[in-house]
Image (cartoon, rainbow, N blue to C red):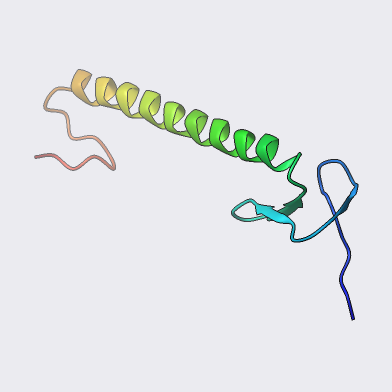
Length: 77
């Protein structure tokens, strides 16, 4: 029995082996669409990193502004 794959990007039939992209919800792409999906994944990760760094910087300022006050969920060292 043979399997036929269609691209989750363009819906065209994929000749050969599909390219899998995704961590949780993995999709199958043709060689033309795979780079677009991979670029999205890369851009999303960069955005996630940027948001995390901005949060960490803001949180550090909040903690610093508290001085010696013991804040909840912040170890005092």
